[in-house]
Image 1 (cartoon, rainbow, N blue to C red):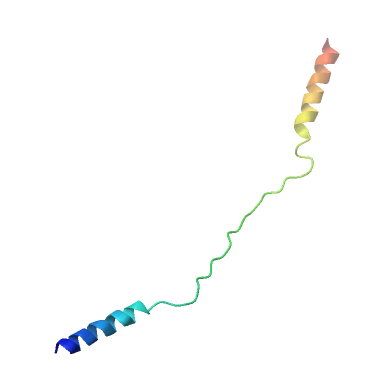
Image 2 (image 1 turned 30 degrees about the horizontal axis):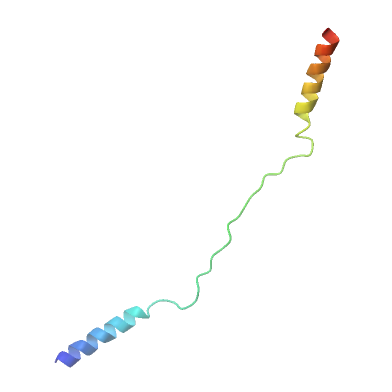
Length: 60
């Protein structure tokens, strides 16, 4: 009887140990979204500063 219980326990342990899949999991790469800016978006601040300096020079 002890051998039957031992065999049943070993069978249960062996079946749960190999219950997983042997293939490696597939990991998808994260999606990176970059917002693009127009080429003229960085020109506004220097133009405004140039107009302000020109107005200050013209006023004096």
